[in-house]
View 1 (tube, rainbow, N blue to C red):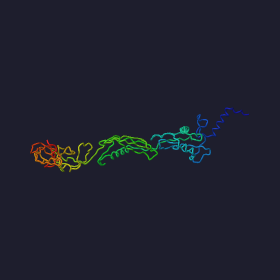
View 2: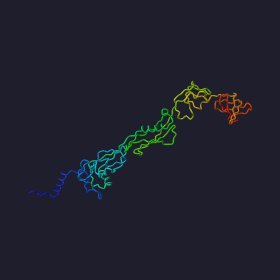
View 3: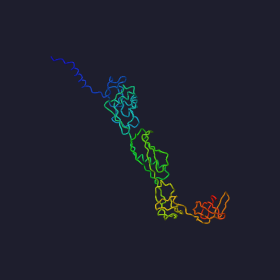
View 4: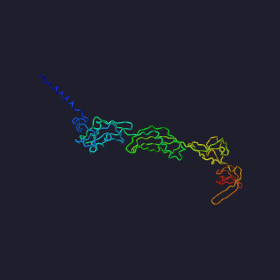
Length: 360
């Protein structure tokens, strides 16, 4: 007669048979493993997500392998399929915020354990929820690359719109190219560039601008860029060496395109402006002619006789005088009254007439 099977061996055989016929649960731990004071998640195999109401009244959640989110935060619906989709509980679960979205270029891993913790803290009916245990989601923020060239062009156009010169007369150069950045696309129409002056400035020689990249009305990135501003124009230059007192004409002057950014004295843009003028000092060939370098040609010579006019309201007195200085129209010169021999300060009107400005 066979020997009876020991009790410890019976126990081992029973455990082996149980493992052979039962597959592992694909969802959360059994109710008895839930932490004290928390509702437990149901443990039954979850069918594929769908819209048909479940016979057991449960809402089933299955994390997607990947998710691309656009907002500052992402919800359960952004990273998981929820069934049945039309139920009120499923709609409530889908709106629950899981976490802040990861920074552009980074990703975030959402596991069933993380999702369970989120729902435990924000959902009362957790006993009616199943979470698929063999899935997890890698979350990335949908982003767009904003390169340095885009930022530099935006700053340049902002400056050009404020300058008084045509674009073909200005050279605007960014000092340093900013690094490219990835910014979120956002839930709206996408990133928007906003450019403002970084300082109160005259936009002459140099300028700084502040560029903000706005996403959904919030600043996602900003940079301050410095620019050099050079202005160019066709100006009158000396075509040859010009001696002091030499008359300026088409023969010894010409037009050339020159940088005028740092000119502190007025320059001439038309050769006709300098006709009738003379060089105030020696001028080298190629030099830009400024108002400091030229003067009007004298029309009144020294020791020449002139008509001296004195005006006071409606009273006009005219007398003869002798110029003691040479002068061009508009110049102040000394003139001696031939009758009284007094010296007068007069302004040259033309080659024959001067007007008293202050009697001495």
